[in-house]
Length: 169
Image (tube, rainbow, N blue to C red; front, side):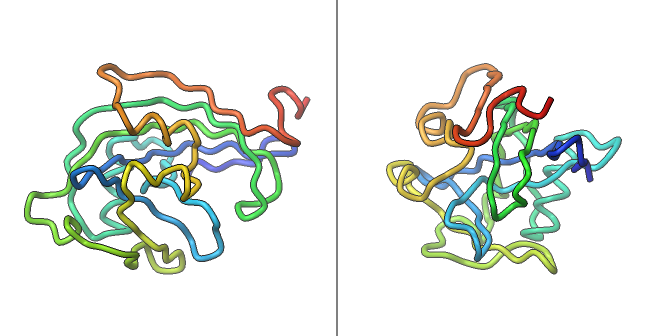
């Protein structure tokens, strides 16, 4: 996986999927997190991001997906204690995806388990109206998921605080 130490921080290449069930979007979080994100994971070396997303959904959900289109390419700078205290520079590819029409994931209510062995997570469908309250990250998604872009957009996301672009030298 592409998750490399760089100076005093980390570089990550990530892919994530946006899947809807009506006006709800599927999110994931680890038990120790007080925030959530979209399903996905890190890309392996010499792996296309669409293939990585399909692999991640197989690993985490044991489900085949259809990747519809690329929504966002995100340059995300953040620092969070529960993913390591060092600054992260993450490039993320966010795709609109869907489960098979007969998938048992559609229609579920409440939290349910997902993830892969050694990294179990909690999955939950969240209404678009509650995305602010669940602390969805990257934060631009809280509004971005309300109206998907017609064409791929390039997003810069910087979490304020100790981290600022160029601080690492």
